[in-house]
Length: 264
Ligand SMILES: Nc1ncnc2c1ncn2[C@@H]1O[C@H](COP(=O)(O)OP(=O)(O)OP(=O)(O)O)[C@@H](O)[C@H]1O
Image 1 (tube, rainbow, N blue to C red):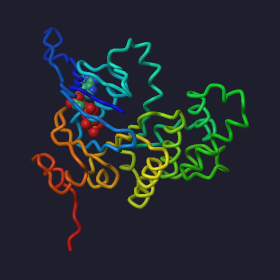
Image 2 (image 1 turned 60 degrees about the horizontal axis):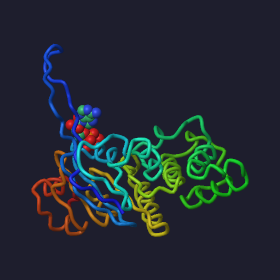
Image 3 (image 1 turned 135 degrees about the horizontal axis):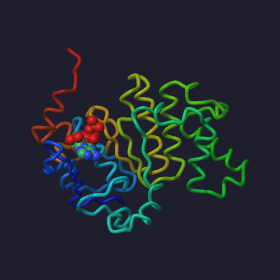
């Protein structure tokens, strides 16, 4: 479904004093080769600064790659002119860590979801009852009570707001969802509800997802495969259970050792 071949995203940064013209290169993503199948959840783990966000933004075509190929359903996005690339933006949707910051506080849930739905199906704008039907279906699918559709984000709890953010990400029928630490800001009991919602959605809609987290135990719960990223590169990749139980790379072992254990 999605293939990355030797993808690099390098940033030039000025070095030294203002008058010197030295330029350094930050190799935020440095030669990543990966493939994700339809309906697969890929866990992407690594510590802060390893390049996870740059990789997601590169996949989503929000920043251009320096080198390499990104192919979505057989179409090489890196070879398309920028104007063509824009047409594929809806194919990628993101879910962020802080749903409160990512939702517009002045828009009701209905307006938020209606806007996202009409991006893919502009004709729905002309048919209010069909649009309302679609908003109701989306809310129900994400475990939200449709009778709250005229409420604003601040009237919901953190977990419910994340459900709204998930519904908004689903609305344009994306081919790939990138969830960037979507449960890190939530209470532990709410975290599992949101993780279960994502698993249900994958089962029902055959969603393809990259799930980014610094927390390997959360990733293990959800992901089919895990890619461990370190300094812009994938240092370990494999089936979740294998990576978790028999890590090969010393960095993965360090990440696993950092998971807190309850004393018996
Ligand atoms: N626009 C930019 N210009 C220069 N350097 C950048 C730019 N964006 C990111 N970087 C650098 O690239 C590296 C990777 O950053 P990135 O934000 O992708 O990491 P991350 O793993 O997502 O971290 P976090 O989990 O903290 O978000 C960092 O060293 C960062 O400072």
